[in-house]
Image 1: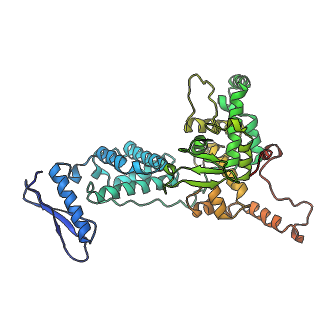
Image 2: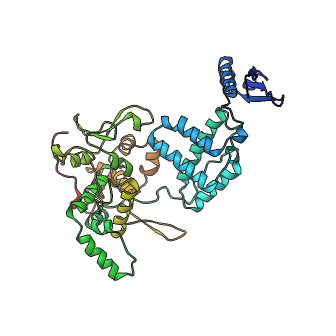
Image 3: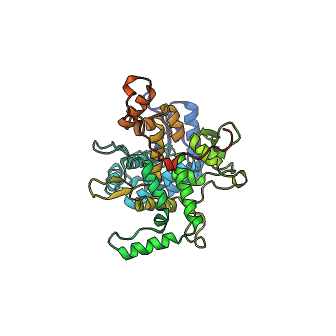
Length: 426
Protein backbone atom coordinates (compact mmCIF):
# COMPACT_ATOMS: atom_id res chain seq x y z
CA UNK A 1 0.00 0.00 0.00
CA UNK A 2 1.27 3.49 -0.84
CA UNK A 3 0.23 7.04 -1.60
CA UNK A 4 -1.30 6.08 -4.96
CA UNK A 5 -4.37 5.00 -3.01
CA UNK A 6 -7.29 7.40 -3.07
CA UNK A 7 -10.54 6.46 -1.32
CA UNK A 8 -13.76 7.85 -2.75
CA UNK A 9 -17.32 7.86 -1.38
CA UNK A 10 -19.81 6.21 -3.72
CA UNK A 11 -23.62 6.25 -3.57
CA UNK A 12 -25.23 3.01 -4.78
CA UNK A 13 -28.80 4.10 -4.09
CA UNK A 14 -31.04 5.59 -1.42
CA UNK A 15 -31.77 2.23 0.15
CA UNK A 16 -28.11 1.52 0.93
CA UNK A 17 -25.44 3.18 3.08
CA UNK A 18 -22.76 5.16 1.29
CA UNK A 19 -19.75 3.08 0.27
CA UNK A 20 -16.03 3.86 0.46
CA UNK A 21 -14.06 2.56 -2.54
CA UNK A 22 -10.53 2.61 -3.93
CA UNK A 23 -8.55 0.90 -6.68
CA UNK A 24 -5.92 -1.53 -5.42
CA UNK A 25 -2.67 -0.39 -7.12
CA UNK A 26 -1.34 -3.96 -7.08
CA UNK A 27 -4.31 -5.72 -8.69
CA UNK A 28 -6.18 -2.88 -10.37
CA UNK A 29 -9.42 -4.13 -8.75
CA UNK A 30 -11.94 -2.03 -6.88
CA UNK A 31 -12.09 -2.59 -3.10
CA UNK A 32 -15.24 -1.38 -1.36
CA UNK A 33 -16.51 -1.15 2.21
CA UNK A 34 -19.69 0.27 3.69
CA UNK A 35 -19.33 3.48 5.67
CA UNK A 36 -22.31 2.51 7.82
CA UNK A 37 -24.15 5.77 7.19
CA UNK A 38 -26.14 7.79 4.65
CA UNK A 39 -24.72 11.08 5.92
CA UNK A 40 -22.16 12.50 3.53
CA UNK A 41 -19.96 14.19 6.16
CA UNK A 42 -19.70 11.03 8.25
CA UNK A 43 -18.98 8.96 5.15
CA UNK A 44 -16.23 11.40 4.09
CA UNK A 45 -14.61 11.12 7.53
CA UNK A 46 -14.76 7.33 7.27
CA UNK A 47 -13.14 7.42 3.82
CA UNK A 48 -10.41 9.83 4.96
CA UNK A 49 -9.47 7.61 7.92
CA UNK A 50 -9.49 4.46 5.80
CA UNK A 51 -7.30 6.10 3.18
CA UNK A 52 -4.86 7.28 5.87
CA UNK A 53 -4.63 3.81 7.38
CA UNK A 54 -4.07 2.25 3.95
CA UNK A 55 -1.26 4.67 3.11
CA UNK A 56 0.40 4.22 6.50
CA UNK A 57 0.25 0.46 6.18
CA UNK A 58 -1.93 0.04 9.25
CA UNK A 59 -4.77 -1.55 7.33
CA UNK A 60 -4.95 -5.29 7.15
CA UNK A 61 -7.35 -7.31 5.03
CA UNK A 62 -10.17 -8.68 7.22
CA UNK A 63 -9.38 -12.18 5.98
CA UNK A 64 -5.86 -11.90 7.42
CA UNK A 65 -6.64 -10.42 10.87
CA UNK A 66 -5.66 -12.94 13.52
CA UNK A 67 -7.76 -13.63 16.60
CA UNK A 68 -4.88 -12.50 18.82
CA UNK A 69 -4.62 -9.16 16.98
CA UNK A 70 -8.37 -8.60 17.30
CA UNK A 71 -8.43 -9.43 21.02
CA UNK A 72 -5.47 -7.16 21.80
CA UNK A 73 -6.99 -4.28 19.84
CA UNK A 74 -10.39 -4.70 21.53
CA UNK A 75 -8.84 -4.83 24.98
CA UNK A 76 -6.70 -1.75 24.32
CA UNK A 77 -9.31 0.39 22.60
CA UNK A 78 -12.61 -0.68 24.20
CA UNK A 79 -12.20 -2.50 27.50
CA UNK A 80 -9.97 0.18 29.01
CA UNK A 81 -12.95 2.56 28.97
CA UNK A 82 -15.35 0.11 30.65
CA UNK A 83 -15.88 -0.86 34.28
CA UNK A 84 -13.51 -3.43 35.77
CA UNK A 85 -16.39 -5.86 36.26
CA UNK A 86 -17.23 -5.71 32.54
CA UNK A 87 -13.56 -6.14 31.69
CA UNK A 88 -13.48 -9.39 33.71
CA UNK A 89 -16.62 -10.74 32.03
CA UNK A 90 -15.31 -10.03 28.52
CA UNK A 91 -11.93 -11.58 29.38
CA UNK A 92 -13.69 -14.71 30.65
CA UNK A 93 -15.61 -14.88 27.37
CA UNK A 94 -12.46 -14.48 25.28
CA UNK A 95 -10.72 -17.17 27.34
CA UNK A 96 -13.62 -19.57 26.74
CA UNK A 97 -13.48 -18.91 22.98
CA UNK A 98 -9.74 -19.56 22.88
CA UNK A 99 -9.97 -22.70 25.04
CA UNK A 100 -12.84 -24.32 23.15
CA UNK A 101 -12.76 -22.95 19.58
CA UNK A 102 -9.08 -21.89 19.29
CA UNK A 103 -9.59 -19.59 16.27
CA UNK A 104 -6.39 -18.64 14.43
CA UNK A 105 -8.08 -15.94 12.34
CA UNK A 106 -10.97 -13.70 13.33
CA UNK A 107 -12.95 -14.81 10.26
CA UNK A 108 -12.59 -18.39 11.51
CA UNK A 109 -15.14 -17.63 14.22
CA UNK A 110 -18.13 -18.65 12.12
CA UNK A 111 -21.76 -19.16 13.15
CA UNK A 112 -21.13 -22.92 13.19
CA UNK A 113 -18.13 -22.54 15.53
CA UNK A 114 -20.08 -20.22 17.83
CA UNK A 115 -22.90 -22.79 18.02
CA UNK A 116 -20.29 -25.42 18.92
CA UNK A 117 -18.94 -23.08 21.62
CA UNK A 118 -22.40 -22.86 23.20
CA UNK A 119 -22.86 -26.64 23.18
CA UNK A 120 -19.48 -27.24 24.84
CA UNK A 121 -20.21 -24.65 27.53
CA UNK A 122 -23.45 -26.50 28.30
CA UNK A 123 -21.57 -29.80 28.51
CA UNK A 124 -19.28 -28.19 31.06
CA UNK A 125 -22.33 -27.36 33.18
CA UNK A 126 -22.36 -23.60 32.58
CA UNK A 127 -25.67 -21.90 33.42
CA UNK A 128 -27.80 -20.60 30.56
CA UNK A 129 -27.45 -17.10 32.00
CA UNK A 130 -23.65 -17.41 31.83
CA UNK A 131 -23.74 -18.64 28.24
CA UNK A 132 -26.13 -15.84 27.30
CA UNK A 133 -23.80 -13.28 28.89
CA UNK A 134 -20.82 -14.68 26.96
CA UNK A 135 -22.77 -14.50 23.70
CA UNK A 136 -23.87 -10.91 24.34
CA UNK A 137 -20.27 -9.78 24.95
CA UNK A 138 -19.03 -11.77 21.94
CA UNK A 139 -21.66 -10.21 19.69
CA UNK A 140 -20.77 -6.71 20.89
CA UNK A 141 -17.07 -7.28 20.22
CA UNK A 142 -17.68 -8.69 16.71
CA UNK A 143 -20.01 -5.79 15.85
CA UNK A 144 -17.20 -3.44 16.88
CA UNK A 145 -14.74 -5.36 14.68
CA UNK A 146 -17.14 -5.00 11.76
CA UNK A 147 -17.55 -1.26 12.32
CA UNK A 148 -13.82 -0.59 12.18
CA UNK A 149 -13.15 -2.88 9.23
CA UNK A 150 -11.58 -5.90 10.93
CA UNK A 151 -14.49 -8.15 9.98
CA UNK A 152 -16.50 -8.04 6.75
CA UNK A 153 -19.66 -9.63 8.17
CA UNK A 154 -20.75 -10.52 11.71
CA UNK A 155 -21.67 -14.21 12.02
CA UNK A 156 -25.16 -15.13 13.18
CA UNK A 157 -25.29 -15.67 16.95
CA UNK A 158 -28.38 -17.40 18.33
CA UNK A 159 -28.90 -16.15 21.87
CA UNK A 160 -29.67 -18.97 24.36
CA UNK A 161 -33.20 -19.34 25.63
CA UNK A 162 -33.83 -20.68 29.12
CA UNK A 163 -34.73 -24.38 29.10
CA UNK A 164 -38.27 -25.09 30.30
CA UNK A 165 -37.08 -27.32 33.14
CA UNK A 166 -34.31 -25.04 34.32
CA UNK A 167 -34.50 -23.35 37.70
CA UNK A 168 -34.28 -19.63 38.32
CA UNK A 169 -31.80 -20.04 41.18
CA UNK A 170 -28.84 -22.42 41.32
CA UNK A 171 -29.10 -22.43 45.10
CA UNK A 172 -31.58 -21.23 47.69
CA UNK A 173 -31.70 -18.83 50.64
CA UNK A 174 -30.35 -20.24 53.90
CA UNK A 175 -32.51 -20.24 57.01
CA UNK A 176 -31.45 -18.59 60.25
CA UNK A 177 -30.89 -22.00 61.85
CA UNK A 178 -28.64 -23.08 58.97
CA UNK A 179 -26.66 -19.87 59.25
CA UNK A 180 -26.16 -20.50 62.98
CA UNK A 181 -24.78 -23.94 62.09
CA UNK A 182 -22.31 -22.36 59.70
CA UNK A 183 -21.11 -19.96 62.39
CA UNK A 184 -20.67 -22.80 64.88
CA UNK A 185 -18.48 -24.88 62.58
CA UNK A 186 -16.31 -22.19 61.00
CA UNK A 187 -13.06 -23.81 62.11
CA UNK A 188 -13.72 -27.13 60.39
CA UNK A 189 -14.75 -25.28 57.25
CA UNK A 190 -11.50 -23.32 57.22
CA UNK A 191 -9.39 -26.47 57.58
CA UNK A 192 -11.38 -28.33 54.95
CA UNK A 193 -13.13 -31.68 54.69
CA UNK A 194 -11.93 -35.23 54.24
CA UNK A 195 -13.72 -38.22 52.73
CA UNK A 196 -16.85 -39.10 54.67
CA UNK A 197 -15.62 -42.66 55.25
CA UNK A 198 -12.23 -41.61 56.63
CA UNK A 199 -13.07 -41.33 60.35
CA UNK A 200 -9.46 -40.98 61.56
CA UNK A 201 -8.70 -38.15 59.16
CA UNK A 202 -11.97 -36.43 60.07
CA UNK A 203 -11.12 -36.55 63.78
CA UNK A 204 -7.64 -35.20 63.02
CA UNK A 205 -9.19 -32.31 61.09
CA UNK A 206 -11.51 -31.51 63.99
CA UNK A 207 -8.59 -31.41 66.40
CA UNK A 208 -6.70 -29.17 63.97
CA UNK A 209 -9.73 -26.88 63.67
CA UNK A 210 -10.06 -26.60 67.44
CA UNK A 211 -6.44 -25.46 67.62
CA UNK A 212 -6.87 -22.60 65.14
CA UNK A 213 -6.05 -19.17 66.61
CA UNK A 214 -9.18 -17.40 67.83
CA UNK A 215 -8.28 -14.38 65.70
CA UNK A 216 -8.56 -16.41 62.49
CA UNK A 217 -11.86 -18.06 63.41
CA UNK A 218 -13.43 -14.79 64.53
CA UNK A 219 -12.33 -13.01 61.34
CA UNK A 220 -14.37 -15.54 59.34
CA UNK A 221 -17.37 -15.33 61.67
CA UNK A 222 -17.29 -11.56 61.31
CA UNK A 223 -17.12 -11.94 57.55
CA UNK A 224 -20.06 -14.38 57.42
CA UNK A 225 -22.17 -12.08 59.57
CA UNK A 226 -21.29 -9.21 57.24
CA UNK A 227 -22.50 -11.22 54.22
CA UNK A 228 -25.68 -12.19 56.07
CA UNK A 229 -26.66 -8.65 57.05
CA UNK A 230 -25.44 -6.77 53.97
CA UNK A 231 -26.46 -8.82 50.95
CA UNK A 232 -23.14 -7.86 49.34
CA UNK A 233 -21.74 -9.93 46.52
CA UNK A 234 -18.53 -11.73 47.42
CA UNK A 235 -16.29 -9.44 45.34
CA UNK A 236 -18.09 -6.36 46.68
CA UNK A 237 -17.59 -7.44 50.28
CA UNK A 238 -13.84 -7.90 49.82
CA UNK A 239 -13.36 -4.48 48.21
CA UNK A 240 -15.48 -2.62 50.80
CA UNK A 241 -13.37 -0.11 52.72
CA UNK A 242 -13.83 2.43 55.47
CA UNK A 243 -11.81 5.24 53.94
CA UNK A 244 -10.65 4.64 50.34
CA UNK A 245 -12.50 6.93 47.91
CA UNK A 246 -11.27 4.90 44.94
CA UNK A 247 -13.04 1.75 46.09
CA UNK A 248 -16.43 0.70 47.39
CA UNK A 249 -16.63 2.62 50.67
CA UNK A 250 -18.80 2.96 53.76
CA UNK A 251 -20.15 6.50 54.02
CA UNK A 252 -21.11 7.57 57.55
CA UNK A 253 -21.22 11.30 56.87
CA UNK A 254 -24.99 11.59 56.57
CA UNK A 255 -28.00 10.71 58.66
CA UNK A 256 -27.94 7.09 57.48
CA UNK A 257 -25.00 4.80 56.65
CA UNK A 258 -24.56 4.46 52.89
CA UNK A 259 -22.38 2.76 50.30
CA UNK A 260 -20.25 5.10 48.18
CA UNK A 261 -19.46 3.68 44.74
CA UNK A 262 -16.75 5.58 42.80
CA UNK A 263 -17.28 6.46 39.14
CA UNK A 264 -14.55 4.04 38.03
CA UNK A 265 -16.62 1.08 39.22
CA UNK A 266 -19.89 2.26 37.70
CA UNK A 267 -21.08 1.85 34.09
CA UNK A 268 -22.52 5.36 34.22
CA UNK A 269 -19.10 6.71 35.22
CA UNK A 270 -20.57 8.76 38.09
CA UNK A 271 -20.10 8.58 41.84
CA UNK A 272 -23.15 7.10 43.54
CA UNK A 273 -24.52 6.69 47.05
CA UNK A 274 -26.65 3.62 47.69
CA UNK A 275 -28.69 2.73 50.78
CA UNK A 276 -27.87 -0.22 53.00
CA UNK A 277 -30.11 -2.27 55.26
CA UNK A 278 -30.53 -0.86 58.80
CA UNK A 279 -29.22 -4.11 60.34
CA UNK A 280 -26.03 -3.83 58.31
CA UNK A 281 -25.69 -0.19 59.36
CA UNK A 282 -25.94 -1.26 63.00
CA UNK A 283 -23.43 -4.04 62.35
CA UNK A 284 -20.93 -1.56 60.92
CA UNK A 285 -21.35 0.93 63.76
CA UNK A 286 -20.34 -1.71 66.31
CA UNK A 287 -16.77 -1.28 65.03
CA UNK A 288 -15.04 1.36 67.20
CA UNK A 289 -14.43 4.60 65.35
CA UNK A 290 -10.65 4.34 65.83
CA UNK A 291 -10.65 1.00 63.96
CA UNK A 292 -12.56 2.20 60.91
CA UNK A 293 -9.62 2.18 58.51
CA UNK A 294 -8.66 -0.08 55.61
CA UNK A 295 -10.85 -2.94 54.52
CA UNK A 296 -14.08 -3.63 56.40
CA UNK A 297 -13.65 -7.40 56.01
CA UNK A 298 -10.34 -9.24 56.21
CA UNK A 299 -10.91 -13.00 56.61
CA UNK A 300 -7.51 -14.32 57.64
CA UNK A 301 -5.54 -17.15 55.98
CA UNK A 302 -4.56 -20.19 58.03
CA UNK A 303 -0.89 -19.57 57.18
CA UNK A 304 -0.39 -15.78 57.13
CA UNK A 305 3.30 -16.22 56.37
CA UNK A 306 2.40 -17.84 53.02
CA UNK A 307 -0.45 -15.60 51.94
CA UNK A 308 -1.20 -11.96 51.52
CA UNK A 309 -4.81 -10.80 51.50
CA UNK A 310 -7.02 -13.62 50.23
CA UNK A 311 -8.61 -13.24 46.81
CA UNK A 312 -12.22 -13.70 45.72
CA UNK A 313 -11.86 -17.33 44.68
CA UNK A 314 -9.97 -18.35 47.82
CA UNK A 315 -12.55 -16.75 50.09
CA UNK A 316 -15.42 -18.22 48.07
CA UNK A 317 -13.98 -21.73 48.43
CA UNK A 318 -13.65 -21.38 52.19
CA UNK A 319 -17.24 -20.14 52.58
CA UNK A 320 -18.44 -23.11 50.53
CA UNK A 321 -16.37 -25.46 52.71
CA UNK A 322 -18.02 -23.96 55.79
CA UNK A 323 -21.42 -24.57 54.18
CA UNK A 324 -20.45 -28.18 53.52
CA UNK A 325 -19.10 -28.69 57.04
CA UNK A 326 -22.43 -27.40 58.38
CA UNK A 327 -24.32 -29.74 55.99
CA UNK A 328 -26.30 -26.85 54.47
CA UNK A 329 -27.28 -28.33 51.11
CA UNK A 330 -28.89 -25.74 48.83
CA UNK A 331 -29.24 -27.64 45.55
CA UNK A 332 -28.78 -31.04 43.89
CA UNK A 333 -27.92 -31.55 40.24
CA UNK A 334 -30.75 -33.50 38.64
CA UNK A 335 -28.46 -35.34 36.24
CA UNK A 336 -25.41 -36.14 38.37
CA UNK A 337 -26.88 -36.04 41.87
CA UNK A 338 -24.03 -33.77 42.96
CA UNK A 339 -24.92 -31.70 46.02
CA UNK A 340 -24.20 -27.97 46.15
CA UNK A 341 -23.60 -26.53 49.61
CA UNK A 342 -24.20 -23.01 50.89
CA UNK A 343 -21.94 -20.37 49.37
CA UNK A 344 -21.43 -16.64 49.78
CA UNK A 345 -24.08 -16.02 47.12
CA UNK A 346 -26.62 -18.12 49.02
CA UNK A 347 -26.15 -15.78 51.99
CA UNK A 348 -26.90 -12.92 49.60
CA UNK A 349 -30.03 -14.81 48.53
CA UNK A 350 -31.02 -15.05 52.20
CA UNK A 351 -30.74 -11.29 52.51
CA UNK A 352 -32.97 -10.77 49.47
CA UNK A 353 -35.49 -13.33 50.73
CA UNK A 354 -35.79 -11.59 54.10
CA UNK A 355 -36.28 -8.14 52.59
CA UNK A 356 -38.54 -9.06 49.65
CA UNK A 357 -41.80 -9.04 51.69
CA UNK A 358 -40.77 -5.94 53.68
CA UNK A 359 -40.15 -3.35 50.96
CA UNK A 360 -41.36 -2.40 47.50
CA UNK A 361 -39.56 -3.99 44.52
CA UNK A 362 -37.86 -0.70 43.57
CA UNK A 363 -36.38 -0.42 47.08
CA UNK A 364 -35.29 -4.06 47.03
CA UNK A 365 -33.61 -3.45 43.67
CA UNK A 366 -31.47 -0.70 45.24
CA UNK A 367 -30.69 -2.82 48.30
CA UNK A 368 -29.58 -5.72 46.08
CA UNK A 369 -27.82 -3.35 43.64
CA UNK A 370 -29.47 -5.00 40.64
CA UNK A 371 -29.03 -3.26 37.30
CA UNK A 372 -32.71 -3.69 36.38
CA UNK A 373 -36.02 -4.19 38.15
CA UNK A 374 -36.58 -7.30 36.01
CA UNK A 375 -33.81 -9.11 37.88
CA UNK A 376 -35.37 -8.26 41.24
CA UNK A 377 -38.83 -9.37 40.12
CA UNK A 378 -37.47 -12.57 38.58
CA UNK A 379 -35.47 -13.81 41.55
CA UNK A 380 -37.15 -12.44 44.66
CA UNK A 381 -40.55 -10.78 44.34
CA UNK A 382 -43.39 -13.27 44.54
CA UNK A 383 -41.03 -16.26 44.44
CA UNK A 384 -41.94 -17.62 47.87
CA UNK A 385 -45.72 -17.82 48.23
CA UNK A 386 -45.59 -18.77 51.92
CA UNK A 387 -43.43 -15.80 52.86
CA UNK A 388 -45.63 -13.45 50.82
CA UNK A 389 -48.76 -14.85 52.46
CA UNK A 390 -47.22 -14.34 55.91
CA UNK A 391 -46.46 -10.70 55.05
CA UNK A 392 -50.05 -10.19 53.88
CA UNK A 393 -51.51 -11.60 57.08
CA UNK A 394 -49.10 -9.55 59.18
CA UNK A 395 -50.18 -6.41 57.32
CA UNK A 396 -53.80 -6.99 58.35
CA UNK A 397 -53.08 -8.10 61.92
CA UNK A 398 -56.21 -6.32 63.16
CA UNK A 399 -58.42 -8.38 60.87
CA UNK A 400 -60.15 -11.54 62.14
CA UNK A 401 -58.26 -13.55 59.52
CA UNK A 402 -55.07 -13.17 61.57
CA UNK A 403 -56.59 -13.36 65.06
CA UNK A 404 -55.56 -16.96 65.63
CA UNK A 405 -53.24 -18.15 68.35
CA UNK A 406 -51.24 -20.43 66.05
CA UNK A 407 -50.55 -17.87 63.31
CA UNK A 408 -47.09 -16.27 63.33
CA UNK A 409 -45.39 -14.65 60.32
CA UNK A 410 -42.41 -16.79 59.40
CA UNK A 411 -39.01 -15.41 60.32
CA UNK A 412 -35.70 -16.28 58.73
CA UNK A 413 -33.44 -15.08 61.54
CA UNK A 414 -32.77 -16.96 64.76
CA UNK A 415 -32.52 -15.39 68.19
CA UNK A 416 -28.77 -15.86 68.18
CA UNK A 417 -28.39 -13.85 64.99
CA UNK A 418 -30.48 -10.76 65.63
CA UNK A 419 -28.92 -7.50 64.51
CA UNK A 420 -26.33 -6.05 66.89
CA UNK A 421 -27.37 -3.31 69.30
CA UNK A 422 -27.58 0.07 67.62
CA UNK A 423 -24.47 2.14 68.15
CA UNK A 424 -24.82 5.82 67.36
CA UNK A 425 -27.34 7.91 65.46
CA UNK A 426 -28.56 7.00 61.96
